[in-house]
Length: 88
Image 1 (tube, rainbow, N blue to C red):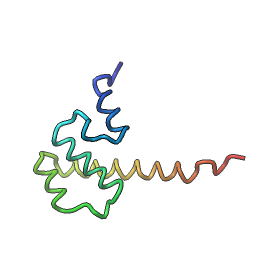
Image 2: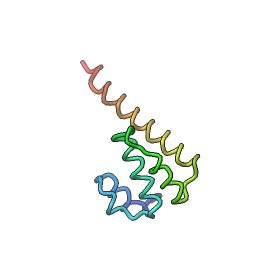
Image 3: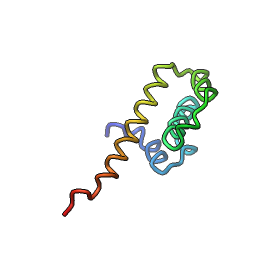
């Protein structure tokens, strides 16, 4: 039952429906930032980062979001690359 209170949020995010996720405005902004990082990292702007700061996120928290987002992207790409590579 641990995490039960986050079930609705997890389902909305799994479904790719950020608008339905019951998160705070600051959390929504951070999730939108990570989405940009995941899909089009080159489109991240200084203004977007400043918006996160204005919403109360610290530079170390923003950096951690980048690190985690980048690591998960790498894990997915590794899994995709090796999927079936060793099946015989």
